[in-house]
Length: 193
Image (tube, rainbow, N blue to C red):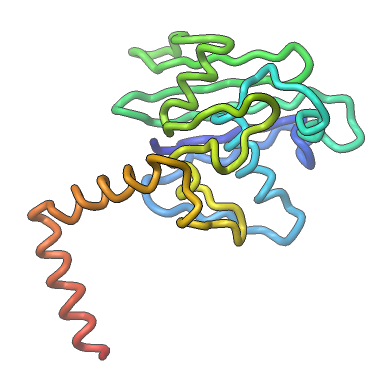
């Protein structure tokens, strides 16, 4: 999965709409002072992909823009399995979820409601708690991809995630193209050390 664009509004410190993107295939750096909303954007991305749109309770109310009666909304544009996708969710008031795919020159709807929530979560092998917001143990592969500040614990990964990572890395290491990269790294290492 490649995240291309993230838009939020009515979400914690972002009362007005804000957009992050278009994002590059390589590394993207989100920079700003403390309190600018970097962690809020990453949290919104996780909530958008992992949580049901119809969740409620105090934890869900905390998504709302501070001191305002606004509806938390998120739109994620991404690429997955060769398809360009858009996931649009609205939490709390008039909760909704819609997953669309770019076909030709327009977005075509694929799923809505719980079906859209489930398809989004499945892209990362995520699971759902019995109630409330998801936590790291429900995020599937996203446990490693989106580690919260100071919270990456590889030993505590949910069942199957560590195996999936090992399998993926093993496939990449076994690729004949990696021999050339390994040789270059070795040469650079020898120059320095």
